[in-house]
Image (tube, rainbow, N blue to C red; front, side):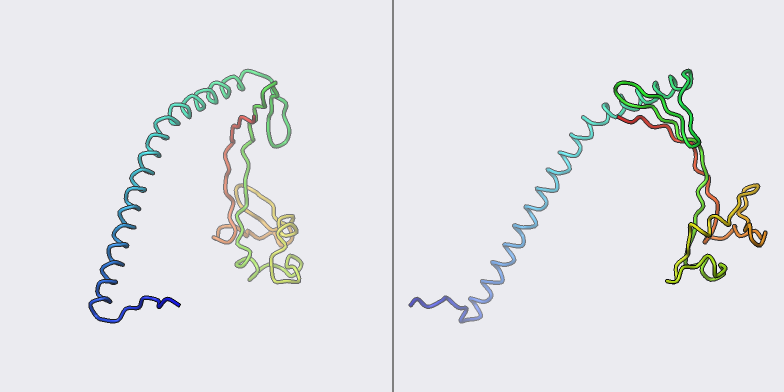
Length: 163
């Protein structure tokens, strides 16, 4: 049976440390080469993609202008216009109520709290009324907005092209 080589002296151990240092240097050099190639590829990709994205944005702008002169189908939340290759969609501006359940749990009525300590947002939201940009409890009539845990955010209209 062959004997497995082992480090037997300080000189051999020191040589092994130098070998590890050399290997680590090689690894870092390879990583640097790879990073430079990745950067070059990403730059080349950006040069190719940017003009295409500009064409896409131009076409979307043209379709949005066209959307203003047609008679789209309207629903409560959006207007749509179907074509063979896709659909033009204008989502109506809306409001979204931001809510921090943990904070609201501190002061919400028991009827709005689920058995597991978490806010029953669906039921709580049914008790909220929006008046003049304020959130008001239908049950108590008190203003309940104006904190980080509960506020009214405006969401602007959004035009989409669906393919």
